[in-house]
Image 1 (cartoon, helix red, strand yellow):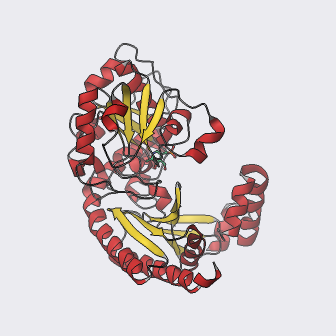
Image 2 (tube, helix red, strand yellow; image 1 turned 90 degrees about the vertical axis):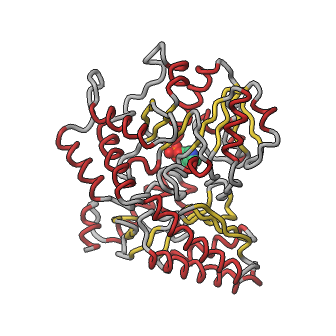
Image 3 (cartoon, protein in one colour; image 1 turned 120 degrees about the horizontal axis):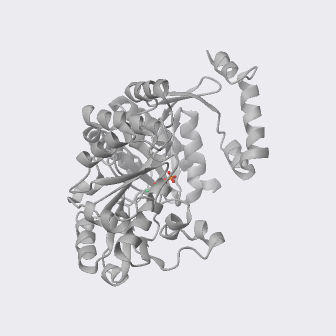
Length: 427
Ligand code: PLP
């Protein structure tokens, strides 16, 4: 079976496939990344279905990295694959000079599901593009320039998104960034009135994911809404990681009953089958920004038929399978288990926190992750660091994960932490 997979990629053996891929990464993709992945013992992924991925040797892994939040429905959900295949049979990408049925339907469906009066959406191809579009909309709608983000946030790596991402190491080599951008502390509104007084927008994640899984107190987003109303700054909720069931709500903003002016989405929006991004805005705000020039913000591939077919099917699956509710139940189980591991090994684990199936395990020393994640991998469970906080291991499996799969992942985590604990003296 695995030999066949290697053959599918035109390689004589699984090992030849792995060697070829490493060499290509080293020479043509990203040499330092190739080294880091090789050191971490990263295999080659050849197949994925549901919550499981298989490497080139045939070993199966329970995926608790979840494509950093992409695979809310698991890999290759049959309803999404069928919808995309059917569209591929019709045609893949349109000529763009005529109306696109599926874009119309996907935008309507998103508006039906989105909080409050969020209505008009622009579809693009990634999270960072959605943030760029939302920032442009805010500037055009308000006539103001300043955009404010939060310390530790991650919104993407294009210039606008990077400018509000509050991560010095990703920003430094590219300065100057967007003029008039700044960051305030996350999870508190103490400095917000002042910061937003003459701002176009405040960009904020309902739960900071890449920053290390920080869950603000109840009411934070309601307070943000009130301050944006007072100051005239637009409230942009970045739901790229937290939305579409991930945090146990259809959108994490719903936890506070807060309706933003603009909401950005990507990752799970097309069920992990086709790349996609989108931002959706209140109609008044949208019209103020783009109402007079329909071509002010465009994308060649944005809103393409394959992505929209995937998104329509994915949104149906999200609702029909009650995935937000499932995320809440499984998330409670995962967090309870992670907290038990933290209580057992306080010298290694400082804290476990999260909302729904976005859980972070904060270690007492950044170095421990380097032994915990490989140990989990050895035991057939993937996990990932938070991009902006290497001290935090992030667990975000597909929302279809079962009770016994969560238990298996927790056993692997416990084993990884125990191994790090045993090595304490060496560090
Ligand atoms: N916003 C948030 C909250 C994210 O977590 C990410 C990616 O991890 C992005 C934006 C950027 O998305 P993309 O990598 O698709 O550009």
